[in-house]
Length: 407
Image (cartoon, rainbow, N blue to C red; front, side, top):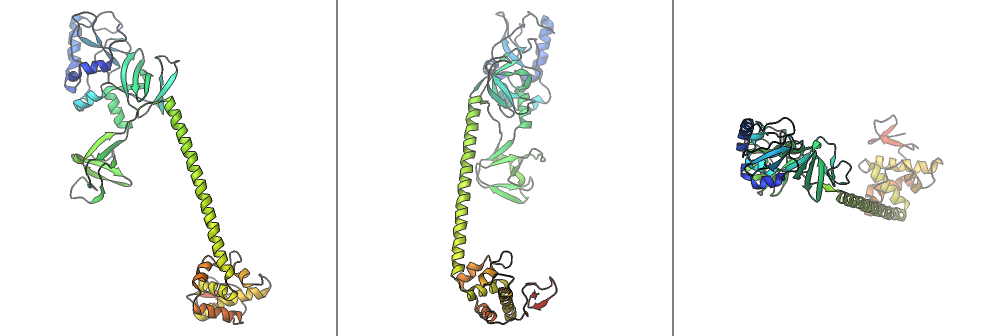
C-alpha cells in the first residue's frame, strides 16, 4: 500500500502532454492488461509494486488519486487512491467530450460538493485541527497533495486541508462548476447586437458596448454560432465569435479575510445609514423651510386675495356664477358660527378645501374673474341661498351651479 506520494500538481507538470482525452480512452485498458499479466491487480492493500510504464488519467473521476513513482528502478508511473487501493481510472463517455485544454486546466482543481454554504479548511489533515478558512460553493482550489481522506489545497490566500469526502476533483469538478456557477459572456467588440432570435435577420433588441458582461442563459435552445444571453430584463442571442464565455468562480476565503470583509460591510452599512439619516434630516429641513416660505406668502395675503385664490383652485374653470358660489360657501361658513369666524381659518380648516397650491396661486396672482367673484361674495352675493358645502355635480342631491352641487 503506497501513501503520501508525489503531488498531482507535479505529476501534471511533468506529464502534461499525456493528460488529454485521447490517452484517457486507452489508459484503463492498457493498465488493466499489464496489471493482469504481472499479477499486480489487487482488491485490498498490498506491498506489490506497479512496474509498468503507462499513460493514465490524473486524479478526477473514479476516485481521488495521487501520482506516484514505482519503488524500483525499472518501474514506471501509476496512481494510488486516497484509500490506498491500487485503482485504474477509466474515462467515461461524458468525460471525453471536452477539449484537451479543459482536461489540462482542471486536472488539479478541487471544489466542495453537497454543501450548503462552505467547507472548512483546516490547518492540518485532522478533523480537530484549527479552522483557517472556508471553501465556498463556487470556489475553486488547486490540489497540492493527497492524504488519507484529506486534500491539501491552495485557493486565494488559504492553504490548508479539506475533507476529501466532501470534495470533487478534475473533470468532474469542471462539470459540477458548470451546474453551480453562473456563466457570463463578455463582449470584445463595440456595438454588438443582441437579437431576439439566433438569426441576423431577427429583431435587434439591444446594442451593447465592449466589455459588457452578459449572463448566459443555459436554459435557452442551443444554436451553433450563437450564445443565448440575458441583460437586465432582456433575453436574446449574440454571435459567439464576438464574446468570451467564462464561468464566474471564486477563491477560498481565510477567516481573517472574512472578518475584515464583515467589518467593512458593517462600516459601509453604518456609513450608508448615517448618510440616509443626514439626507432625511436635510429633506425635513428643506420641507420645513419650503412650508415656512409658503406660509409667509399666505400670511402676507389679504382676505380678498385668499378668497380669490381658493375660488380659482376650486372653480377656476367654472362659469362666473359658479365662482361666486364657491366664494359664498366660504362666507356662509364664516357667518354661520359653526366654523371659525375668519376667511383664512375657514379656508385652511383641515380636510375642507384644496389648499396645496395656495401659495403658488397667490404668488402669481389670482385671475381677474376670481378676484371679482371674491369681492362680490364678500359683499353678500350668494347664488347658493346660504349653503355651506359643495361637491362635483352628480355626487348627491342639491342645487347645481355649473359643475358643482351645493347643499
